[in-house]
Length: 436
Image 1 (cartoon, rainbow, N blue to C red):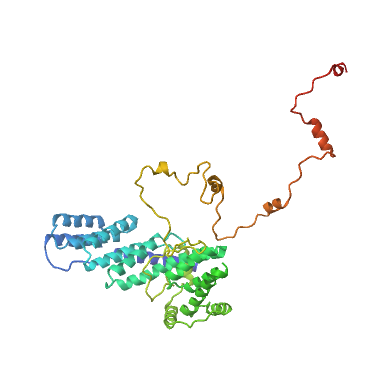
Image 2: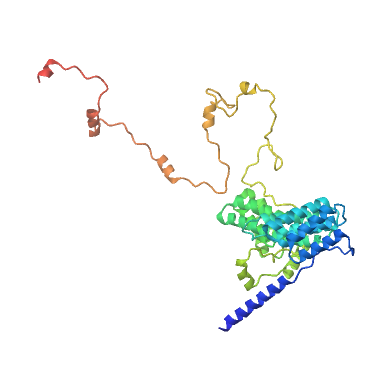
């Protein structure tokens, strides 16, 4: 009973706090401090008052009147930014989409104003606040990463740049966690080429990820299980654990693996050691209550994100899996021996038929009939799983076919010869047979 009363009192207090916060009007961030009674300034101040009191539609109508009536006003840029801010404050799926479009227009028309960096920061926030957990849709996380990176590239000296860097590290923590879960799933299922492809790209793209040492450990194990020809890749992953993540739990095991491979054991990088110490000292883990309530939250947990270091400035792009053989003559990723050429001669279809068409009696480059070569099955490419032998087919091949020729000594042969109808015409009956 006492616990029930406490829960009710706590609920009443929370409701009161929510109501008080709703009554308090948030001041507008970009007011015009110029004290004048110009009609365009009067309209602007009236619209700002409507925005602060939540009358967003009325505020946008007033700002549109200002922009249409006073097309040479000095407050046009501020009015356009205020329209975007009204949509941003209104929120919702439709409101945030409209706010992003308005902010993009403001940056396009006024790229040199100080508020352009703020507009880009608001675009980043739009997708940052809509991010979901790593095991769900990553569309907003990818969009937030692109927009925050754009802020650092286009406005590197802005006062919003440090905050955008930390947001970018938080976003990349979420994306990296999702990629790691995918790679760990492939590793657990035994699809080691697929796991190595995911984990290799992840380790190279996001070295600030909180679980980067675990990524390298599973990457090395995947290469180790794929055969001796991938031993150099596995050794490289173990070396990175020892050198770049010296406080990892896998350092001692990685050293033993390198010793077994007769590979040199590197020294720990001093800068990496200091960075890991700082991260461990400033990292806050979720409490028991927070972990319990996390099930009901949509937003991801970003407490484990790095606090220092330069975030990645390129999007993650998984490479070509190691199980895919390199084409002959291909020297770089993305190149191919396939070429395209415009055909100008219209008689080529008559003189040079389509190479895919198999003509009767045609021969291939190896001298064999083209139709026979077309029937040959291509060799399968190496995959994630080895094909299991079909024991039933192997047993059927080992068995010799039974001799179906009937023997003269068996009764079946006699029965067959007696009952089998003859294709030859019947012999004419003689008069003696007729009498009998």
